[in-house]
Image 1 (cartoon, one colour):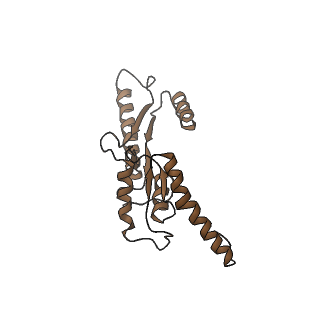
Image 2 (spheres, rainbow, N blue to C red):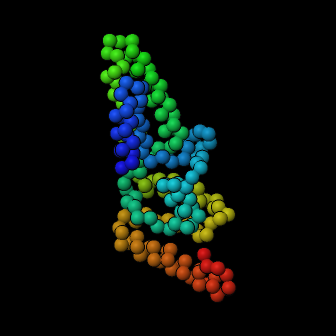
Image 3 (spheres, rainbow, N blue to C red):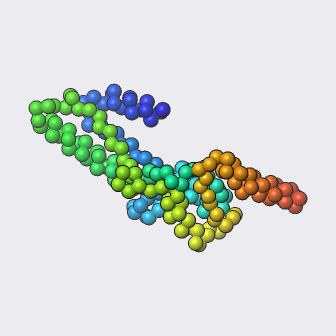
Amino acid sequence: MTKAVAESAVRDLSKGLPVAMVRPSIVISTANEPLVGWINNVYGPTGVVAGAGLGLLRTLYCDKDKIADLIPVDMAINATIAIAYETARKREERINSEVGVSEEECAVYNFVSSQDNPLTWGEFMTYNARGTAIPSMHCVWVYDFTLNKHYSLHMVYLVFLHLLPALIVDTAMRVMGKKPL
């Protein structure tokens, strides 16, 4: 909702200005720049990948056959720069024509991958599983991650793969006189 309110405000207040809006879909780590796979957060899909890779996340309620509309952050930034250039170029053309700039509208660009390069959530997690060949020193469990499209099955997985192991570990910690995790 806040994005819609912000877009509405920009659209209303940008009359006569060279403004464009860029709507990238789900932004993930870099494809190439500054380094392949660079990211500085663990939000969204990155958090799922990190949690699964460390063995902390074993199941996720998700349909593996649905399209994961993911955009690398460096591509989103490059597209934004290109759109800014195009917006300025179009404004220059309007100034030099009879149309003028008063009738300029705020262009909206949806930057998505699903049209030209669709990738499912299952494929995305399969690609990420390749990174577990050499596990992190911080792993708490072997990589074994499942995407469940059925909520009831996901809840069964949660009980047996998350809740029960956590209770067992916490009980063992208490028995040893240590603070539970």
